[in-house]
Image (cartoon, rainbow, N blue to C red; front, side, top):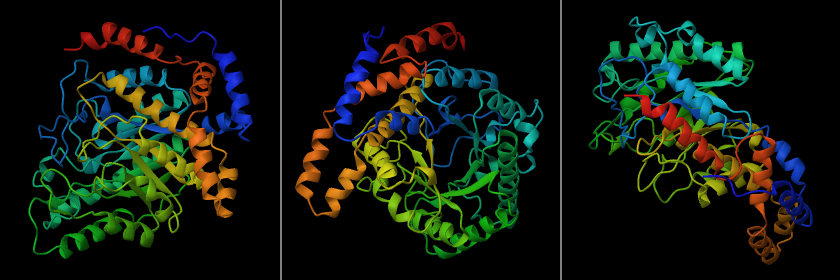
Length: 423
């Protein structure tokens, strides 16, 4: 699909004039946008398969649907796919790895024995691209997670195994940060929960708190590694009770001074993540966002430019929170081209941020402070018809990535030349 856009710079000049009339400095907005990294997630490229070959089912309440051809089968294939995606996304971004994506040279290495050396090729790749890495312990798809319990397990030996896994993962995250010169966010998510209502809700949460305390016991310089904890509402096999609920992790993050991860798909369908950002940042220094799109449940659909995505970006800009928030994508769709899924999701997240940065926020804030809600509403509605698309096209062109739908042709060629040849 060839781009129909021929006069990108002419359209941009006219659009910049329109925004200037509303008091918006477009050049400043674009400069700010270029400084915001989005962390792309490894698990979109291979359906959360990883490279361990433990023989275990995915588990953990996770489910990837679809069988589109071209799934990455090796670390090199995954890196190549990410390279293609990044070439179609404006800006400089990050990459988010799970521990199960270690490269062990064909040797079996248990998760509690992983070392930075098992991720050296990932480090070298990221360094060559000038981008940072983020990290996640993998508390699923393993025989010792088969019953749906890990850090809250009643068996001390199993619990110890997963504690040690968390400890080594923090060290790996710190090695990423030290090697790449940008702090790694190491995020802890566990699947622990129960299908039906338990009698004892307290003991698993006590065990989880003790396990987390053991994992985080060793101080690590925040220049290299930032610890985050992520809650969830429910999961497959844990519909009635999740040990690491939002209330648990919010309390834990506040009391232990970790980051709190807010996942857009981990709430009741009537809740929105955008409303939670200012609430948690009133007491926390920093947070991690996992930007996803749930459809009726935590289904991890590819992110689109929805009202809620725009609201999330607006909250980050209006609250001046961008310097305190780490943005990562979290979805997995095997029903469409996996490289395209990354590109669609990342470009939509960046578009949402650009729309927010193009608001005349000081003017809107002043109108609200004056109690002039009529003018505030009227101005917000007028902004919706401003030529945001012309600013976006200019940003893509100046970033040397395809403008408009032209990137689809690049993905089609890659599919024909590379993905289709994978068995």
